[in-house]
Image (tube, rainbow, N blue to C red; front, side, top):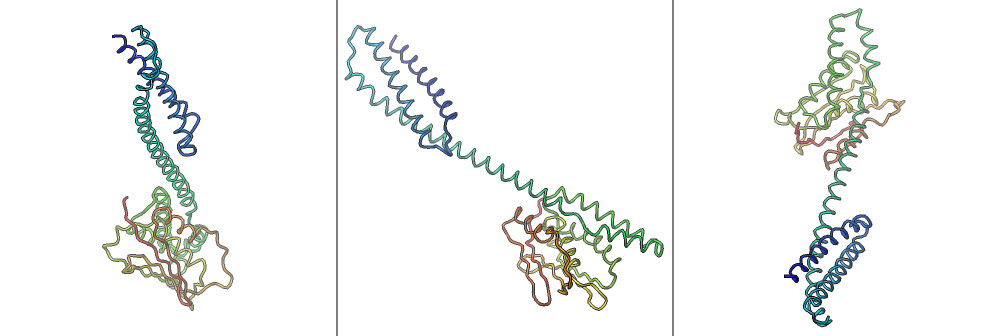
Amino acid sequence: HFPFISSIIASYIIWTSSEIIGAEADKRFTWEEQPKIKAIFLMSLNITVVIASLYFVTSINNFIKGDPFQMKYFYKSLVPSILITVVVNLTFIIMDFFKSLNESKLEVEKLKKENLRSQLESLKNQVNPHFLFNSLNTLISIIDEDKETAKNFVQELSRVYRYTLQAKEKDISALEEELKYLESYIFLLKIRYGDNLHFEVNIPDNLMNSGIPPLTLQMLVENAIKHNVISASKPLKVEIYTEESGHLIVRNNLQKKKNQVDSNKVGLSNIYERYSMVTPEPVEATQSEAYFIVALPLLTNNI
């Protein structure tokens, strides 16, 4: 029975050594940076352990039987043992390599998502309506003249800021929600600009549940107002509609101010970046002599 026992002992030594070698290889090398060195390290040490274990078992068995140690019998057992070791180790090396590769990809994806989330939060924190000061001035000017309008103005202003705070918790908002919010925003603008500012919205009902990054429409309207003349002789018209291509179009007639307002780079660049984080489809901005047009891809709303 001793040959059987010695084989069990040798197997235990090989298994334990293999685990120790594997742990040591993980400490010293990585599959991403040193795959060849790690594979050679694992293979060579495991073969060495197998040869040593086979020599040990052969020597003990010959000693028990009283037979002299003969190298030809040792070599005869050595060849299949090495072949088996190579096949087994190669299998485990390939499995470990692809496992590590998959874990590395998952980690990279996780880091990418965390980085994108961080960038997105930073971008959304930039989205802060810049018309608050003007809105308060407008409120002061009407509060004595028309208290009912002033009351409505305050209600709509509160709706605007409530939605702004809620929108910062989302990556995508339903188009219908954005348009309802835009109604409150437009109400405030109309109090300030009156008939000098015109809005036209034409969206079919079947697209109302489509998605867009929150506050996108408000930012485009804000940009149009910031960079264009608005007066009785030159009223500004903003149109929001859809094309057969499935894009949402925001268009305004172009009448640029002579002294352009300094941009804080929150407008279009913010929209470009936020869209790039949720879809590969680009936002397209074009300008002609008469119009400035922005085409927004409509997204799937999973909220």
